[in-house]
View: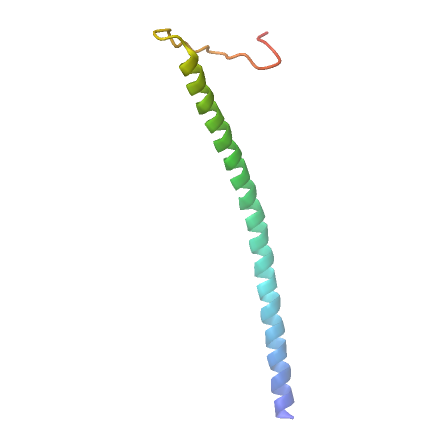
Length: 83
């Protein structure tokens, strides 16, 4: 009889630990999803900056030697113009 009680308690303890572990896994999965979103945004920013740098180098390489490199204060937006 004592063995049966001990086994029941053991299984109850295992069940409780499993429930705790499940909650922890759920919490970590939520955090991972949030961090993954941030990582994707950072990757997009990095990609955009790489393209910008490459474009600047291409433009500079195509400019005649000695030409002044000027920068517009307000660059035109593709598909539109300044108002």
